[in-house]
Amino acid sequence: MPNVAHTYVDAPAAAHACADRVAHLLREMIGARGAAHLALSGGNTPKPMYAMLAALPDIDWQRVHFWWGDERCVAQNDKDSNQRMARETLLSKIPVNDQLIHWVPTTLEPAQCAAAYEAELRRACDSDPKSGMPIIDILLLGLGDDGHTLSLFPGSPTLQESSKAVVSTIAPPTSPVKDRVTLTYPAARAARYRIFLAGGAKKRSIIDACVKGTGGYPAAAIDAAEWFVDEAAD
Image (cartoon, rainbow, N blue to C red; front, side):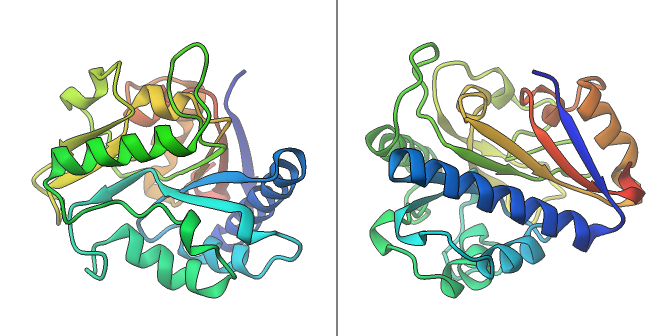
């Protein structure tokens, strides 16, 4: 299945459409299986989408498992924490089941953190019969200026990982936090739905290449996904 790009007039419209799509999938999966597994993305781009998602009706949030696609190895209340951002913009706004929030244990050393999070994924999720990877229902993804997604950076050895679902990795020197844990390509490809929210004129050429599966960017190799973008990035 190829990538599919949905283009909207501006970033708020793209965020709203993305929230509607996620809500639809959550309702569908909860109705079919009684639960859904949603992996959240970090950064600034998804903040408006999370606020919109929290306001949408008829989602049984008590049946949603929350995960993170990647995280910086900082305290949960740190300004650079993806978990803090999600808590402030989404989790604190909805009636969640606290037992279904799978926090990344960033108090551990990075390698131990990655191993513990993979064990938790494998405990709570179904396993893909082909790859053996834990199956996340909806994996939300962002796009960096260098074409990275999750914490899968250009040229990183992490891109070659084939057996682990979660690994520790090092971000480029320009990053505010170098130590990370991230889902790997095999784990991302095992997700039932991969959804990118991205935009802005400076990312236009990167988004176009990724949607076409070209350019050698890490995000281009994530496998087929839905892209929600604004016209500046079309």
